[in-house]
Image (cartoon, rainbow, N blue to C red; front, top):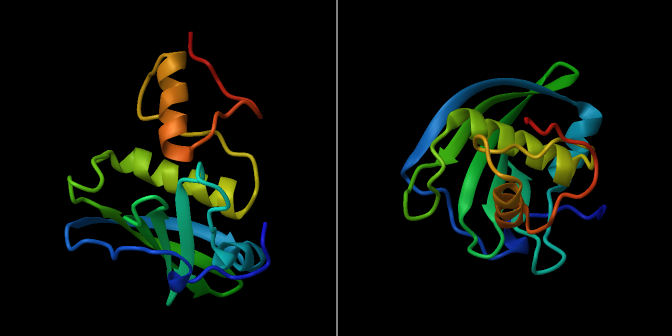
Length: 155
């Protein structure tokens, strides 16, 4: 993980469209976690699917290939912690079609854990899928096969 901070000018990106859904959240991060989160994530190779940066209290999460903004998460100082209180989700059907609020929150939490905090988290799935569909979904969302860690297989 790079110590250099990723910024909006580090990548070719598009703004969040005017069509977005806003969700109220109640999440917390420590100051140490916020240091890592605020560094963002810069794709290193073609298969890296995300570009993430933090500016003006908002974590901006973009698809790397298109520059499309998918999520914006507001993180506000709250004593010794940082409060994640609001999430904007791209609702332009030409840019992003996943309308499941619970999945979108789970996916964002996964991206933060996996890409920014470098800790294990299970890859969320939008419903029950076959093993082959799980692999295709993971490849589409993350650009990688998830062969490490543990996961629950419902039989």
